[in-house]
Figure 1 (tube, rainbow, N blue to C red):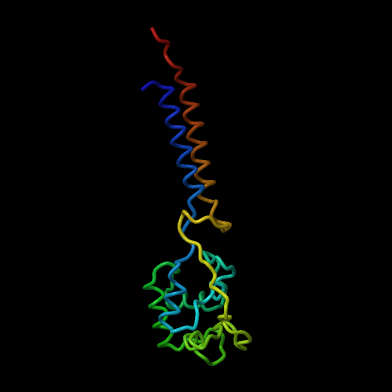
Figure 2 (cartoon, rainbow, N blue to C red):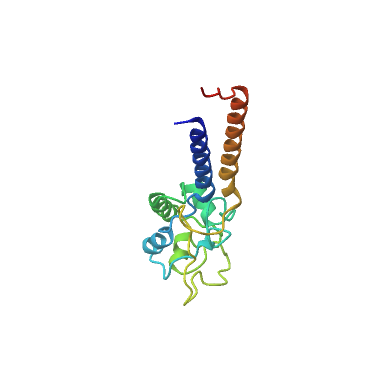
Length: 181
């Protein structure tokens, strides 16, 4: 393979790696969490993502401070990805009778009663009749708005690629190609 072909191959590979890093979004939410919560607690509907997250898409870094999601994460190791961590958190919350909103009714009981465990006054039902659940986004193939931190990997990859190209150019400038005979 001649030198020009190798350079083109390296450049194409670098662009492909950069594109993959820029396009692939990290896992944002486990799509099975709402159904698992509904099943385990015999809830009347799938709970909305906004019960724990500050936006309907869920995702890393979007837990509402001092609400049930953040509370169960810190107290019971809820990780947002594995169903086993949700099952463990549900059991621990039931056993400890955790009451996030301080209204005297445990979180799991409120969920079974269609009440929001974050609202001490229970002003509105958690599930509204006829409303569907939020749709969590997950995986690298899902097209959805990105969280602010999603572009960090893409930016870092671009910098690495640019530094690599600069290093290759500098090396080729130091070692000019020998003329063919």
